[in-house]
Image (cartoon, rainbow, N blue to C red; front, side, top):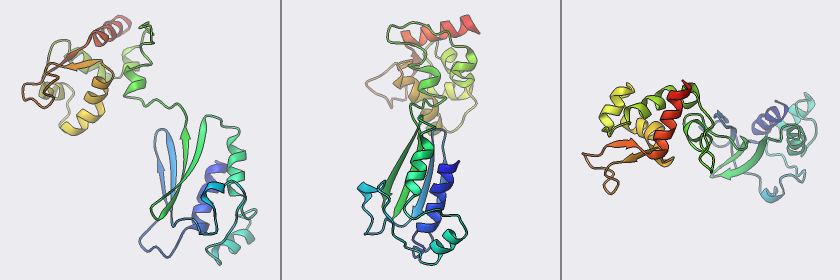
Length: 218
């Protein structure tokens, strides 16, 4: 929290307030917290030496007020404070970027595996030797488990969406179908023509082993 608070303080103090219509943005994802501040670094600040306690003030009114209030401890000390705080959290990586007319920092969880794709049904289930880890239906996910059951025999995408009570085809493909195809759990019956109107989807050998294991441990 200390590191995140410092990053937000820096965003408020150092943002470019001349960029009308722009706001500081804090975005929270499953694997990352991202803070974006309008305005690039000042020309006097070397991007490649950000951790060298460089200091320059863009906002000559806000910064002194923050320092007088005790919100800022010491000029040029922000990144060191963040780095020192994150020594207690080795699983978190801190990165900074200049993107267009914005400065952005990210607190990212290392080795994150998103629930619903790889971690749910992919490499974490089968190691390189193909040994089972015995996942339960909850570990695999209810909807993806329904897909495996439905694909025990070739099935068309419309039928899969009906089984899963979903209507948005693009979201269905992105969230469920594509990850299963990429993990070699499902396969197309007409792989040479992915967009064929007769395209169906069915379990691969890996998918059948996974389905059998789910049924056994459910």
